[in-house]
Image (cartoon, rainbow, N blue to C red; front, side, top):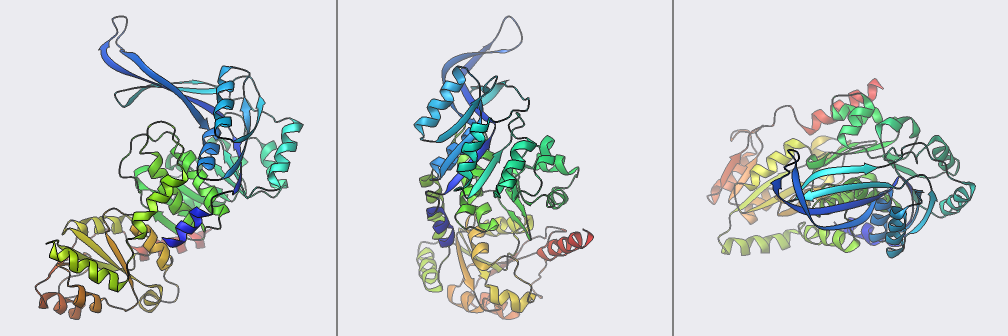
Length: 467
């Protein structure tokens, strides 16, 4: 995790331009105890209400609270809601260039007993056009910015005119898209649809085919809620969700694209940026309302996970202490290249066999010996970073040998877990004798049919050859 922590520390001062549909979110909280005598609807007794920045303004807010230097461009009306937006932006010291239009977009949510009862939208979705003065300010901001975020909610801000202007100024663009505007996004660097949007934009029924189809526009990161993320660039990567508790998904996409932009501006690879953004999203959905994740929130997420990857000496001492406490130690090992659903189910099942799960991760050099010169797809540090984020993985050790015999003989785990494609007769018999020599047990999990890293890689090759 040290590399990801370094990237996050570099967020400070990164210059980001946000262009998109500026909104105001209003949250009304109350209680429901009876039904109206006038109609079969609940009566909400209002207890409190508050405003927060929404849409592109929330993206700018997230960039700011994560340490970035952000400039926001968009439209507002000449109304009371516009005054509230300006006040909130000024409180956060966000530079903004907002042109007056006919109406400020307002989303009003009524919430009672932790459930959203109703949402009311006030909006004008006609195409909007920036003045020459705004374009002048935008051109000046683009000279210094590192990433441009397009926050498109299909309210009329994002047009051919603005996209052509950005391309002419050689901007590195990432887009939170809307399907109806797909023709606007040609040759952007990165597109971040949710699963529903990706399927709709590609006219596909399978999310993997959808992402590969959209790859012709640019790199693709599909956000998939509880399923995590799917990255399709020159390689494919599934990233599991890191959220332990989902309270409110409002604004989670804004958080994702903000963290992606700052990570990329801080020299992260797409894989590293996706991992960081996924962590940021897990914080956002654990909070009520439209929440701007801050840098302290994000750094805290990595402190515990950094400590999961151990040296052999550190792990030996930890395991010895845990055994003295009567804890049952589970060991499993593997390449875990291109993490997929089968891996997640396997690791969850492994953890269920004891108190602490130790994951032995094959190093890059050992995978090359075992799998060939073209493997691994993901380097060992990235694989360890992803696996460390899983709550059911307690410790990780990267080993360079072809077999973990040395580790098994010294650590003496209570349970040795192998996948369902093994039997007691087909596992490494030296490993088996080591486990049985001190009374340890071998547990073989069931198979997740049809899912394997090799099959995924082969499918990717076939899809690429078809195109």
